[in-house]
Image (cartoon, rainbow, N blue to C red; front, side, top):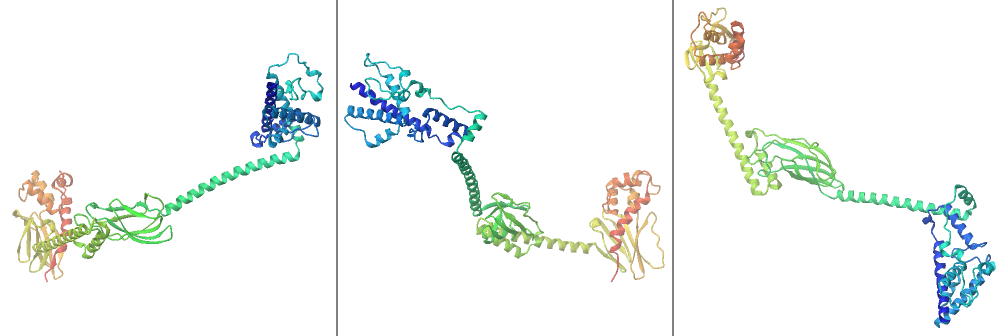
Length: 539
């Protein structure tokens, strides 16, 4: 008897578990079936088939109006099960459990009870066997087995494993079922779709807004971050590791709207500027000082730049070229300004800046002394080149200086080759106006200068660009003399102002044809440009 009671209790518990499982299946959310109308209709049909003429509610309970008799039977069966359970355990189940059990689907409970009962071994071989076909329709799902009290038995045809699954309806069936769908259910489905769309749209907007806020945060952070930039500079011979850096004056406004005015220092490659993003004007404040004391000319150009990112190359927008002036033209003010900026940040220390200043001063002073010495020597040379007679004065051409000597007799002045007094280059003779002038044999008139005091000075001499090559070749009938090759070369170069070489004249200009006119023109053109303009009347 005890075994029978325990079997009844197990059957009741199995019925409860089965009812809960079916109830969970009945609560499948709209999103899990993707709001498919055809599947919802299919599920409705399954529920309609299982409940007969009545329709189950959302919690799995039977419709009391459609199946009143089944509910009475289920209640009686559940009551018997609880009574037997209370008798076997000696305790009564609590009210909450009783109420929950009362809502179990009668059909599911009886089905599981029969399944459980079928698994129990037969305890009485004399029990009467009842055929399902002999059981009345209303009692086929809740009949009482002999010897087992009122435990419900489920017909095998509707056991859990045999519940038909919903199938995908055809297009026609879906259309028919769509027309059968109540307005309330359709509105709920539309509301669900709209809700999903709103959620998706809200998520997309949130992602975009988050990205925008992140970019804004990065931009705000960059606006307060110092940016290293490069400008273009060129200063020949400058090495900032041994000399001073280039001071750059910066003025403008940063991204915060704050005004900026400061001096920054860059090396010979244009590195060294760090600023907040903003718009600035750059210019060179003063010259750097190279290790050898070189001071540069400061360019007056200014560059407008916009700093936006770290590592930005501004060399195409801000390029400064610092030229090297003649050292003797550097002033004390330039040296002092360069030393000041070197001490304030251009050099590694104030002591280094002082050393560079001394180097710049020494270099400038040496250059000034050298220029002074050159000027003094030029004056002496000018005096040495300056010649005078009683009627006129002149300057020996620079190209001739040191290579020629002179002699004079009254108003006649002869310029000859320093290494050979018997080889005149040009002879100057003053002739009164109205008188004629005839050069010596073998010479030609090379030029004339009117003194404006009633005299004209004539220049005459051999046409060496023509005579020398002809004499060397031995083709001249009446050569003035014979010339060694080195002397012949020097004579040609002097009379043409070093504009032509002997080989050029011999091979190209004179040649075998002996073009005297072309050779003569070389000499007369040079004298007319250099010597004749220097001949002036004596004061």
